[in-house]
Image 1 (cartoon, rainbow over the protein chains, first blue to last red):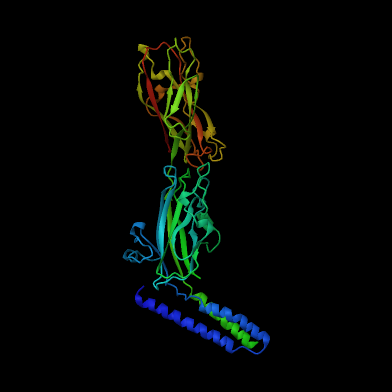
Image 2: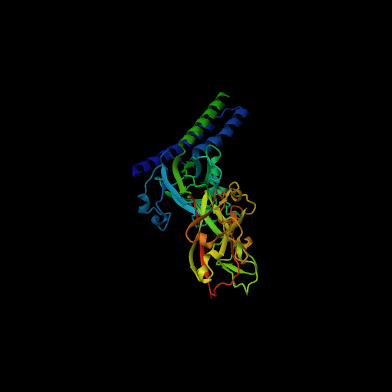
Length: 244
Length: 235
């Protein structure tokens, strides 16, 4: 995204604000003398005003979800736009989380991995948005197999203005306790994304962020168990950023 | 009225336009991993035949099996028990069918019967008391009932009969350490564990490894020691 396009987005926002005001004026100018009709017009006026004067929105393609290659590549101050961030690839593939060995051959308490994800706005500010997640592929499990609810998932280390994280995602799944059978007691799991066509909301922001970058870390964890050693099927997780 | 309708339409049109302008971006994350075939042998318990002593290096259930049995005195004139021995209870877990192997990996203080020494063939060995662990809520099928023991390894050596010379009659129903002087399959079975981890009390197969020596007038020896190593393998 180059500088020219940033300017274009800003102009469009200004024009819409102007049109919104004009629209509201016409509403009042055209108010009929009838009391009932005037009441109707007065009812509609604030709706139109709210819709038109809400923070400027952007056209598709103005936002991208980016993967930060590793935490080590991040600048010390996350909120600054360091040169290294600019170099990371942008696109639909955010990356692969490789949890490696999930059987008890893994001596760790958890097989865990995390992905630091950046949200970038070339316009220099980010209106309020929500991040949703859904599974776009998965395979049914057989007896003793690793299942979707064996994958704990959480969102941590959000850098955004007033983020509100969904209750079941607001934790680090690699730190939960286990029951007597060594099964983790996760809050949110991939299985929770399996219900509903649109997936589930992970978090949302409530205010416009005055800057180009937001970040969050997606953490996945599996407690090693005596799962059936079938060939492991990959799970595809789709993340969607939506302004609102 | 017409004007009101027009105004309403205008407001709705503006609202629709605003909706279309909201941005959306999508990205996908691929989650991968592997589940390998795995088995585990952990220490669970110990039952002496008489007053023998035994300790596991880490004396907690589910710790790695590293057990030492002290049979103490084996001279017939000093030990008047029928057998000196005991059962070491281990818990086996696997996510696939398995084979269990035993092998005496080292031994000292043993000699030959011709010289009157204690020998490996004097130490009876068997696998017994197969039980699905705990509430068995995490075992796969019936691993205790479906396990198969190699001939000779399925009886309690502490119950072996003796001949007129008070020598245990091991053959053909009882095995000894001589039978596992090299790597030998002693047991096999189907998958044991239906998920759960190494600390679950409900996903294992409990087995007793029984050892027994009949006290006799062996050639005196200050100390003897045999190390038996068990290995689980998935086919």
